[in-house]
Image 1 (spheres, rainbow, N blue to C red):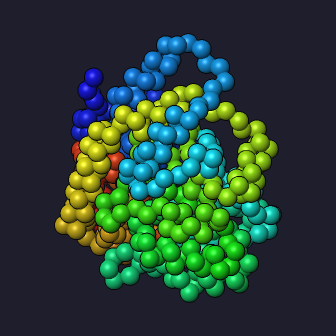
Image 2: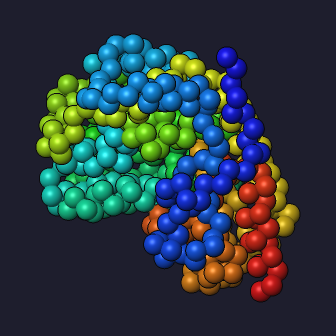
Length: 394
């Protein structure tokens, strides 16, 4: 049987399909007719192997409590070895309904109310939400956009924020959402050694690990043996294979004490077995989805190149930040002279686009917009054309 779902130019009507991306504009305060390129799910059909496996599972007709055994782990491990040169161990694995859920469990497991948790802003906004909503303090070491059109870490500020705020936990985004950095080995080791020095635990969100277009992804915990005692590594097939609603993530915690504390919080939250559909989807994705993944990766890479050229040639005052990883481009509109409010009005009400406003990623994101380019080329061009038309009208 051959892979069927390789037409990434295909326009799929997702309206009235219970899609968060397409069906909830009005409820989220947006005009009903906006074109959405915000939340990080793709507008592509997933691998036909996954589709077929889920259909077969549904046909079985019995949906009792389900769990997986060693073959599941071996499939996940093989993907990590093949793509990232990392060989996790089975006892490290804790399955959760999602990475954001895992972030919340880590906050509750490893800190107390009032404790400080460190982030590198601008960063994926649920980082701040799970810190704040669990009555912990957000401490940010802001990234710096430098002349090479990439963001960089201020390591001196990073260490100073740890000592000044008695930070106990650090959320690392690797690759970094939304600024598109794929952190180098040297950068990660410098961060890791600072955290070792000050007894700071690290939760490394590596959900975008399969979307690297420049350089290579470095699994943080794999860089030094000592990092195994301080690191929770969060992975999932959801971004790679467009499976967000399957609610399955694979969290690896080598340190036994940290793993027990994490599981205790999961027990307190009432989480035990996960959906059989998510388990089947994950197994099938990692065992049979290679052809689809490679084709999708090439298509998204071409979309990134298309967007880079378009922005440079047709969007005056707009700069696309150099993207090394993720499928989320980060556009700097500050050169247009628009205020934050004027930019929001142009994007939402004039261009009729639903993007992720940079300000939701922290104050350092003001003046930016994040755009999901994992969509058919025609959809991406339509979105950029709308921005161009409104910028010309000013």
